Length: 114
Length: 112
Image (tube, rainbow over all chains, first blue to last red; front, side, top):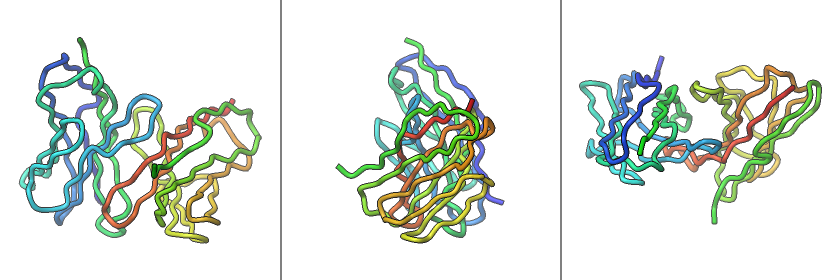
């Protein structure tokens, strides 16, 4: 069965430091991959998505993600974190059948210290 | 501005009450979804709809029901709320396959 794993439950970084959030997926073919961010008390906002082509995807708020087929990974990165980036981050993959539906990971909570 | 709206944002209600969580979108999307999210856990699909008069159950069994009488409106109803229904409920819509979702702000439900 398809699945998404986010190995880090909680990450703490200092403001201005670089960030990498890990995401691994299980899927045989080329997946459709997504990263969402959820601020406290809010819904989820799409940061970026990967369908095909260039494996480095640029998103909103200065985020990027790199698709690595050999590692079944789609890690999210940001060169310099701002305090406003503190939130919960979810990786998701579209299902192989009924690709409109997404399977989500358990999320990574990012805490940013000044 | 095209968006998706959920009301109420927060609801505290007593056991046995009937509740309806509202979800409306102004984007004209045919596909709409309800997810249940518990703290520290992934989102679980509980209902979805591909258009008017189309509703299906999702992966996670839920005692809630949904209806889709208008394209823009996808309410979720609990006939008799219980403490086990305490959770955050997120509504989303999509304009096609593998395009990702647009989410509402969610309703945090507490049943006491």
